[in-house]
Image (cartoon, rainbow over all chains, first blue to last red):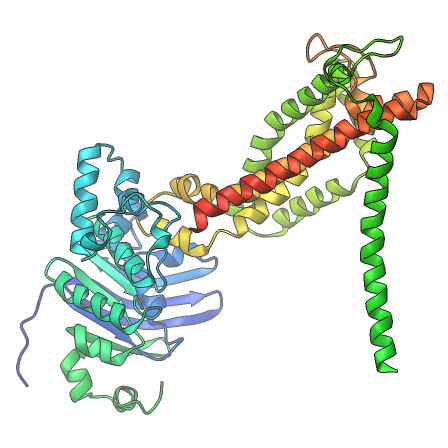
Length: 256
Length: 275
């Protein structure tokens, strides 16, 4: 098998365990996620892939009774030893399953993050909003209606504005939690195209239900089952020559 | 037999609905019938005259004072308390206890609040029978209403808004201030407006704390009477049902106006947020 060129590892996860109260949801997860690549997390519902994704920007902190052991190291900094969750989340952006724009104008949505960071200059905000919307490939569709409510856009457009909103923070890493599961096929295609273009600038970790999607857009794929990583490898290898029987069963559609 | 039952039940439901509407129409009709002749510009905007024939402007002013003062105090405290209970407090026994306490407070008859106000605000704090003492008592009465409605409003804010905001590296306070409170504004406003209705309609507690002086209040430390107290007293003292009914008309119109404003505001907000 051809040796892929290895990027440097951006996120290093070592022996990560997560408990919801008494119930353990992640079991000793080890994963090295590489810079400026798309890493897909696949697996059946409830396998822990979304839970894992949310450990990377500490979104699980919002849930009562969550306990985490192990290390998540991003750029040599241990995510669970820092007190500055705010800084972590500006560096690690997130796009959710359903578009969750705020009930404000498109402009205000994209400018929300930078404003909260204290950027007040109108000129600078205009620049950030335009650049972000351009990077999210939605600028042309919304440039004439920036001041209208973002909730008037279609689902696919909203999701791209959500991506723009994340980009506006100038993050290094963007986490995506099944970003196309609520969208029609055409919008899905647009987002996938966007993700492929974005990886030259960002490290992307995407949870997906859709195996074809993982195959189409990702460089590496991790297969989760019952809170464990069964197999993690180049996407091509996972889909063509899986090492583990369970991975093979899943990617060939025998369960899941 | 089954059809008979069905029809019987249907008839019963219809009758109940009809009765409740009929009662309302009868009351409003009675009040308007008795009092409408007295309604005039001078009656509403004229000064009160103890010898009869005067207006009720001092009572309207007193009512407005009590509404404003009570709300100025109760709204911020109520909203902050609700935010604490809903967003910050660790959900557990203490929070359940506080919720139980606020819920129980809404069920206490207002005369009890009046007695408390008369002892605590009027006597102990030496505010005397005054608009201020009455307003403070009313603050305690409407506080649970504002807390409850605000809590309900906060609950309806989708989790995805909070997550979306926090994931952008904002603090909890920023999220609260910029996303959660604006989205729950219609609910909070409707709670405040409900409180206005409660204050305007209150009589027993005000009677015991603001007194019954029928004159334009000089300051918020003056004793004065609100519309409801006035309505009660004219019936009690002179048996003048027509005058009391005329005051009633003014009250009904005020409450109706408040309800219309409430519907209007919440519709407007809903448009702004859900578009």
